[in-house]
Length: 102
Length: 182
Image (cartoon, rainbow over all chains, first blue to last red; front, side, top):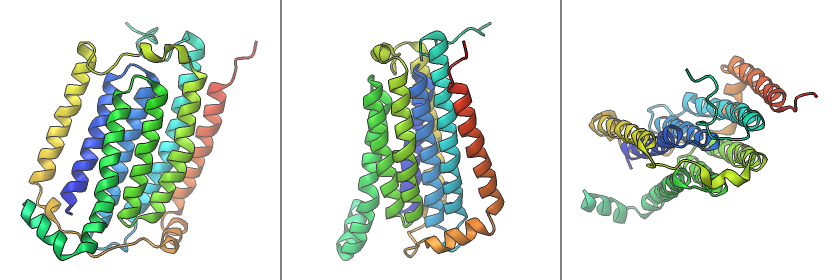
């Protein structure tokens, strides 16, 4: 196993997340795509830590832990916003939430 | 290249098993993520997302980052997936199948094309980088005691800021989602 394989897996996972975030019109699917992209970033942190010269330096591990914590906060706020939007316009399609459209 | 791979595998069966512990969950991870992205039914997408989170946690554990793997399982599978399922059920389940899908129309197809262009660029950089050809170093592990000492020592300010962020996010989420007073 080389670092390439892990980085390639992470890049493919990131691509799936990016495709979901850009292409799906459902707000929950967009959030799922964002979670996938964050997971890909965490996989990169862990891969670089695993292949580092000095694994006793835990910066990669700690960065992944903090990233997971921030992702939890982001999911909570994002889903609260989705519930509020659904209550206002009775839809979770982002195409329908176009009141500020110019 | 395949022969080299087979040679190293047959010479060292433990290494083979160790690598498959990473590669198999990674394959499950990618398949589940791809299926989650193309699913029309949101509940199916959320369940496949949960499966991909579990596979990602197993990859972390197999790479030697046990603590991050268990945090991944607890936070993502235990909390984030639950919250996503709750949000799907609280919003309108009747509209589940009306959602715009991948490749239905110009804008979604353009989004997918942009994503795969980014993938091509990333893979080009990854496979041309000299850094990426590094072989696997000796098995590393991150002892939980060392992680705890680092969290309470060098990274204590980041930990406090993360605590404040989580508190603010939870209070904010509750305020945002609260019923409007009549």
